[in-house]
Image (cartoon, rainbow, N blue to C red; front, top):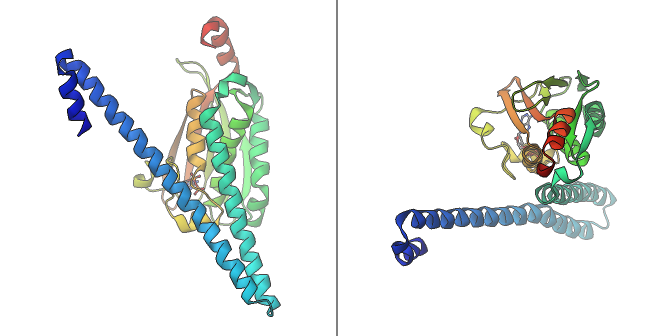
Length: 274
Ligand code: ADP
């Protein structure tokens, strides 16, 4: 359609330019499609709890002479309201990590503090499932980046490890310093003994709103946005997140981030890159 029209108009300028313009159009269309999908997904995800709340409030009114039923409906309203709050909070987190340049207020961040914070965030839920959490190798390590974003990323990984594991299993967080040609990195590996992820799903779990089992994810208060946030934080810090998993055995998510000393030295050597 418009790609052809454009190529006819610019043909005299040479075929390479035409190719570039057509590629640009294709990319612009792809971005537009992704944006439309995202808005459709958000609308759907918001409609589900709002619809449930509306039905439940009607049920409460109809059951006004049955206190037990009122209690039951009110309890379910609370669950739906929590779901809605989680979703809105994660949407805010996602837009924040996408819009803020994390390196603007980057600083050396202690790994032991990040790990302690992530464990704290899941302590209640892990306790309910009698899941043991253990961390190792975190002493004296520092990563370079935005403290809030890094805490959100690691917190999401640990939260998932707890969510997708059966009772009485173990979640481990192992940290280590790895020297590399592209600069030193800190590796943070979160390992669980949970349900695992198939090869087919591994490719998609980092997409916004993708869930292997939507019902299970919703039951644990999941929004499908957590890993998209983790991936974005890793990339914008010059790091990466990868997954190893075996179905029925467990998963390891590894977050690689620039080591603080190395990152600071680089910034000092090339102040214009700061
Ligand atoms: P959610 O809010 O659903 O947890 P995420 O983006 O954090 O969303 O994760 C996307 C999906 O990846 C989850 O719904 C789940 O199916 C899968 N997943 C994430 N972490 C794990 C894990 N540690 N073990 C098994 N499956 C996982």
